[in-house]
Image (cartoon, rainbow, N blue to C red; front, side):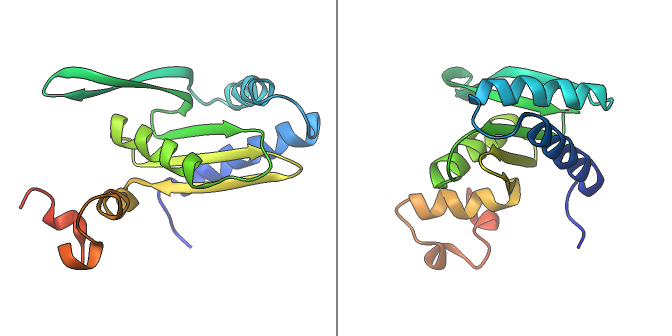
Amino acid sequence: MDYLHKELTEKIISCAFEVHNYLGYGFAEKVYENAFRMELEQQGFQVIQQKALTVTYKDIVVGEYIADLIVNDLVIIEVKAIKNIDQAHEAQLMNYLKATGIKLGLIINFGTRVNIKRIFSENLCASVFICGKNSVKSVAKNPCQSVGS
């Protein structure tokens, strides 16, 4: 199956498993984030850790987020050390993608085993419309095409 940045994400995921295999389960999220950054850098990736992201409205900053890791300016990684990834974590990463224009994000959970969730920016329009007053069905077959019309 082909998907966006397939080779890059496979290498990122391999690094996540390396960290989990070495550290095991039970550490704080920050421990995994730091070890993961180190492993990614050792594998030759350009990594930005704890990147401040801003949301603007009419050229005024109205909000800020902090992305855990950005790899090669192509993938945002949200690191977790929890029992399960839930919709709130997915929404968090979607906001990061919207704020940056980056098209792909990964939630990587260092739980009892490594759990990974891919989020593509193409999925964002449906999420926006579900939260709005209009349902997806009443807007269009492809809600992304009807934005602003």
